[in-house]
Image (cartoon, rainbow over all chains, first blue to last red; front, side):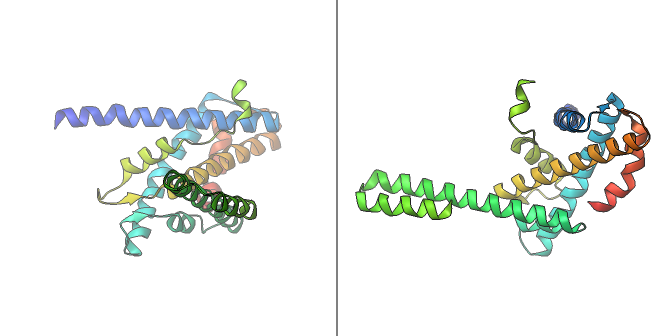
Amino acid sequence: MAESSEQQLPNTKRLQAAVHYTVGSLCQEIANDKQVSFSKQAVAAISEITFRQCETFTKDLEMFARHAKRSTITMDDVKLLARRSRSLHAHISEQSNEIAANDREEKEKRKRSNSAGKRRSDGDSAVADSEDHIIE
Amino acid sequence: MEREEEPVEFSKILVSKLLQMHLEEDKTKVSGPAVLLLAELLKVFVHEAAARAARQALTEDVSVVDIEHVEKILPQLLLDF
């Protein structure tokens, strides 16, 4: 018991540090863009907010999945999370389509390389190539 | 400086660890695409926080964004997400 709680704390701290690092880099991007600079406390505040927001997001996602009688959180749940602002919802939907397309492409590639190992026919690969162009 | 070329974003590993930490039921799983999409959502969240705080500072004619500017934009930010 004592051991697990001892391990829990550094783990949380490590994740917090990782969030802080990413937030710092993102703030730097904005700073370059808008010609301002961020104080250390401002960056720390934003990363603290982000870390806590993560907790809210996770709990919401878990409930959405449970409401849909699923035990796996899917992209649909994340889309529902971004329901409050119309433009955010549009952006997230667009991204989800992109991710889904990439995912499909990767799966197809894997399937193709699997089948190429079994039987290699020129006709098949030509068809696959033209399909690729349609997707792009 | 050299990292400027690749876009900054939350790593997939970090996001899935954050999710795992807060999940209440152990049997809940997260699909890979969902993790990627959540990483994008978090990136937008931080971008919005930083950009709004920067704009708040600029309207006050200050070029250093401090915690007070973050405080001012926080309520509306949380209402939007």
